[in-house]
Length: 334
Image 1: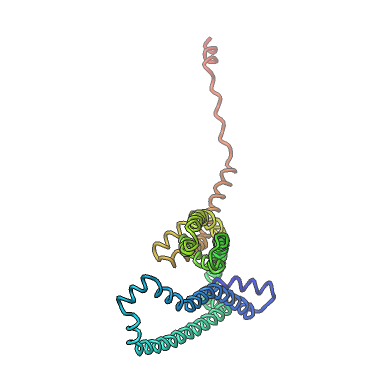
Image 2 (image 1 turned 180 degrees about the horizontal axis):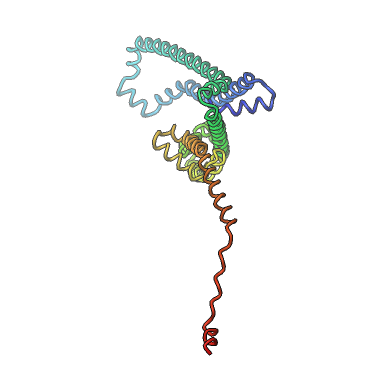
């Protein structure tokens, strides 16, 4: 939720809006985008289920007319079984209808929960500055100023990280979607959305999306699967070792080495969630350490500059007296 705070601040400054209006614009806009993506993904699924339901009678008829179907019908007396168990089938349909009502109730519960989460996010983003002022008011003036600066940097870094992650996901979705179109896969737009969402998981997200799309590519032709596997392997290496260290490293203001190390370390501790939030956590730790040690580093820098200035003002050492050479002493004896 704090990721949206810099976006709301930017909307306030750019469109000259109040905090409430800017928060509503950002949260409701994000909700609309998520709903559109879900519609893109679910529409092909619903269409496929409907087409399958329409084709079930034809599939059953073709199976019964096949040699295997006739053999199974002769051996198992399937038609007699259907006639004898017709009442049970009717009751099963009724139970299925009850199950459908349960699914509808569950869907309504999900809708209510989503509605609640949206408005909780809206109110939290809107009132976040007042919450921060209340918490920082418990501290002294100096500590409040310091922790206000730290929290600003942490929120900005986290928001920039998420924006960078979204940019990488868009690149992944574009590459996978274009490849799906070129290979003639069904529903390429939905596959691109799935790839972009799964790519939010560092390191393994693009691989998971590639496995799903690769299964569909196999239904087209083995050659399509081979081509898509090559695209997956090349893109995954490009994302892990070029895009993430470059884009996310700049967004979070940490080195590419720390980006990779953060994903591996926090992912090993907390799994997928740790891999997603690992870079912001590492960036936040570095920000806190940097801010808490700024006085000590400034003192050391001042001490070094003082020592350097004293060294420059030190008078030159006295020249050694010229000792008489051996030739002079010998000439004196003469």
